[in-house]
Length: 249
Image 1 (tube, rainbow, N blue to C red):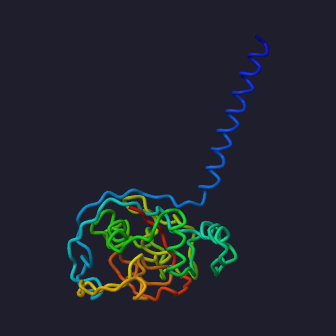
Image 2: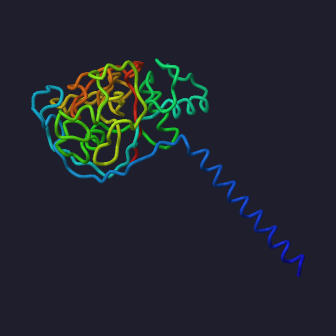
Image 3: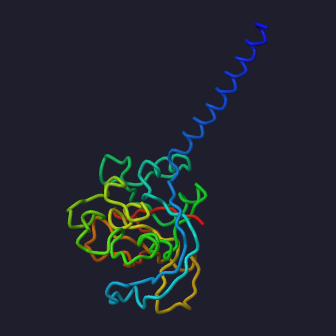
């Protein structure tokens, strides 16, 4: 009877240790994985709804979005440095010795895409990005607010005289609890640059080297930090104010 109870306790100890070890292993391998926010799809007026004057973002037009997920935060140096060590690529440059949970910068479009793919994600489409930035297509001129007066609350821009990205999640989130979709770092979009007025222009990602960045940054004034503002740049550009976040279906 004594031996029976002893072996039962020993078996339970081994079982608990095994599953506890698996839990800790899973936790340790997931620590750098992006946190994703589910976004319910819908139809919204895509483009310059605010003034109707931005020639890159007119005509505003209705777009339907399927359900998707998008990163709660911009990818950090900690996350990208871990990815770089796992894939044997160079870690990105930083303008500060401190890297940590600051939004990563100096990452090309292809490196951003590779990071997202590593975790089974992808870069967001341009319509997904704007829909999420505007809290499911609301008339938010900055991510999280309908007015320009609140820019210091929701976005890090040129007006705060910073020379590098800051820790993600420092500013207030939008209605979906997503942070830094205005300001801090520009964010790579998964598509090539397309003019609204030329919807039939068909290139492939390999043929067209011009990519889209969205959201503005610490280096830009209030205009570029607006939710509908579009900027094109080459896919191999490395800049101190361009980072990214991931998305998935």
